[in-house]
Image (tube, rainbow, N blue to C red):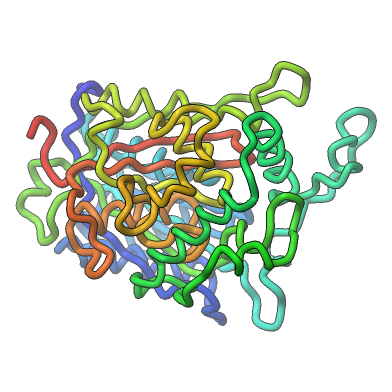
Length: 391
């Protein structure tokens, strides 16, 4: 196996109905997405000999999907829990397994069903009350109970250090919605203005409602195989050129770069180096956007603009339709659907295939995909291409 020159490709994509889809379990969604992805590739489920499952926060899906699907003699089978970075990790591990001869066709899946009829979306991912004593209890006592509060601290630090404004965060949300309007899979397709963003209620200062991602029921699955086999299958192959991971291990003390620099600053260059390309050659950016701030800081850390200039960059219109740096071209997690790292990955595949319809980006030879998990704790990056590596 040569990790310097991967020879794998994504050949199948399965996306279920997204959003307020009630009466179905995460397992139900996972089975549908996997079945659709395998059919999309022009394969039979009997040809799949590897399965990676991202179990989500509640561990609703796991390796027992093998039995549910009726798969037999699986050669690679595991759960992968990197939270929002899991999709990138699973494609990496699938590629490595194929390169090593451990498997021929590997499916990667994420499914979730947190929304319940009659209950508000905010109740889907409650903060976890834990028995803590001493210094370890201070963040919880201070109100840092769930993701919005913790990301608010990161966003506020970026604002304090670099002068980033709420209006600049709003520009990220507006750009995402402009893309989502053109995406039939998107949950939110009503146009949004900066005024709409600024008038939306505060969730955790400085993050407003429209700074926060959606909550979705559904599933996404992808199929990975060798580049050689991919050339014979139904869909245009999306070749895996490079990957990288970085897990900063921030500490809550003076000197930490939490909020200012993320693991994307390491995982991005690692993926670009493996792919043998520079950041200036990237055509499309699919960025994990659990919050508007995450898009902004990740673009900085990947090098699409200088550190501290992310606010001006996004406010310029660079990431919106017609901009110089098309980003989150399906609407992202802010306006399309929230399937952890499978949201940016699925749109990257659609763009690389040239199948995005009205929102298709003209230049889509190289696509960069980010994953972010925890509260800026875990990061993955993929470089994908419509072409075999070297072309």
